[in-house]
Structures are given as C-alpha cells and as structure tokens.
Image (cartoon, rainbow, N blue to C red; front, side, top):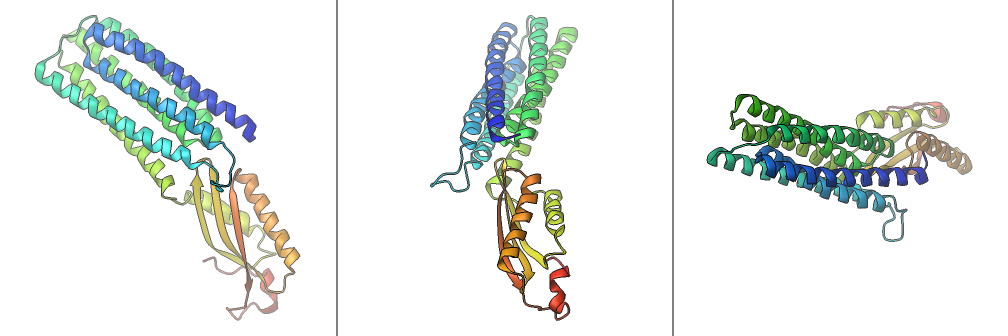
Length: 309
C-alpha cells in the first residue's frame, strides 16, 4: 500500500468515527435525561470525549502524513504519538467524571424510568461502535497509525461500557434495584482506567523514543546477517518509532580491503532489504573497517561472522 492509498483511508476512517460519535452522543444524552440513568449519562460523557478524540485523530493523521521538510527533517509522524497521548488523557478525564457522578448518585439516590428505552439506545450504540471500531482497527494496523488505534480503543471501551450499562439497566428493570445503575457506572469507570493505562504506555513509549519490539529488532538482525558472507559484523543497532515510520541506525563492519564502491553497494542492498520489510523507514548505516582486533580472521575476515555486540 503506497502513501497515496494510506492517506485517504486513514482520513475517511477518522471521519467515520466523528460522524458515529456525534450521532451516538445525541441519542445517549436524550436517553439519559429521559430515563434519569447516571450510567447512560456517564456513557454520553464518554462519547463526548470520544468525539474530541476522533477530531484529534482526524487532524493528526492528516498532519502526520505530510512529507519531511526543512524544519522537520524526520517527518511529522510523532504528531500521532502526541495525539494518542492526549486522547488517553481525555479518557482519564471521562473516568474521573463518571466516578464523581456515580458516587453522587449513590449518596443522593437515583430513580430510573423507561429503562427499556435506555436498553434499546445502548444496544444500538454497541452495534454501531463494534462496526466503526473494527474499521478503525483495520486501517490503523495497515497504516500503523497510533492515533486511529487510540480512537478504535475508545470505541472498543464504549462497546464494553455500553454492554455493562445494558446489563445494569436490564437488572434494574427486572429487580427494581436502583442502586445497580451507579454501581455499573463505577464498573465502567474502572474499565476505562485500564484502557487509559494501555494507551498512555504505548504513546509515551514512542514519545521518549522507546526501541522497536524485540521481534522486529531480531528480524532486522536477520536481514543484515543474510549478507554475512560479504561483511564482518554489525553493532550499535538503535531503533525507534516515529508515528508509522521506523528509524533504524547501525554500524556496519566491513573488510578493510573491500573497495569503497563494493561497500556502498552492500549498504544499498541492506537498505533495500530492510525497506522491503519495513516500509517508510529511515535507515542510517555507518561503515567501519575491520582492523583484525581478534587476531584470528586475518585476510579472510570478510567472510567471517564474529559475535554481534
């Protein structure tokens, strides 16, 4: 998938999230005031922050796809990491508001009317969010978009939260125990906190230049050492993620007698192989001559693979 294909799909997915959240907010607010259910109102608040997050995702994916320029030589990919971090903070705010409303209703009491209407609205909300979140997850994985992944995480949390509200309202409808409504709202709040932690951990890791996953670094090592017959070794592998873009830096050790043209060709081969597996990567290869420090390989060092450091 090339960049021209990725950009519209990411933007359209973010736009779909904005539309669905806007409609669900209207339905949830109406149902919340009609029924008097604090859990539905809590879900409306959650969806309102989801809408803000969807707007952030929409603009961040558009900005992140801008090519590198003079002021941003590494591109704009980290905008998505910032967006994901801010979206996680918004979810945290939603959880706090839900806790406060649930505690207040536990103290003052609550009275729910038209519970069946509330169940219907939340059931519709679940179906819509399942469909939209699946679309967002699919696009986020294909385009490696943290902003869209965070937005999909919000909607997935909404699905589980809506399910909890449906169960709570159903039990209130059947048993008449009004206290179940704020208790369910508290449960929703705890689940949202878990989603917040996961998103903060992932987005903050990118912001502080956390290395790529071990599996990816092992694959990078394998790709490099596929050329072991023409090089001595490599070391000082450093990696990080810039939005959907990876940065790979390494020191390549070549036989000191290898012509510079052959060394240049080797770097091109390695870079091409890495790009075939990790698209949109920034690859920097620093070449060093082997000085026979080990005293074993001698003139044949160009065909000997030493221990990777």
